[in-house]
Length: 98
Image 1: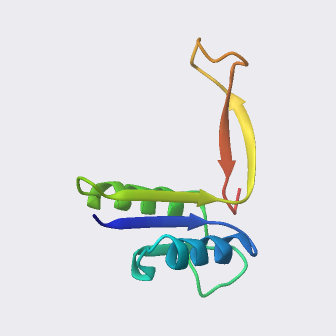
Image 2: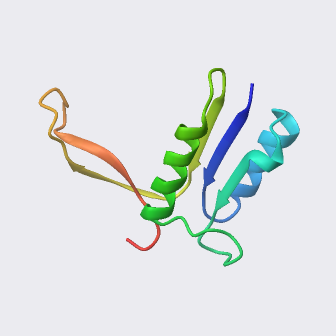
């Protein structure tokens, strides 16, 4: 089983999750993609970058793979088109640059 992960976070959360995944869960560090908005050496977690990497993860996934995504950041609610949504709102993340 291959384990691939996308960690989206700001500040210390990303490093705490990376440590937990690699040291406690046995995940390969080479399969972890990190996006942070506080360090230019990493990919910025813009909506475009997040969507591109999620699409890549899904396209490359094989049976039995585990895909893990973590986002630490701001969220919001947007109007829902789903008539079964009790509060008529969907939850959404707010990537950097928005």
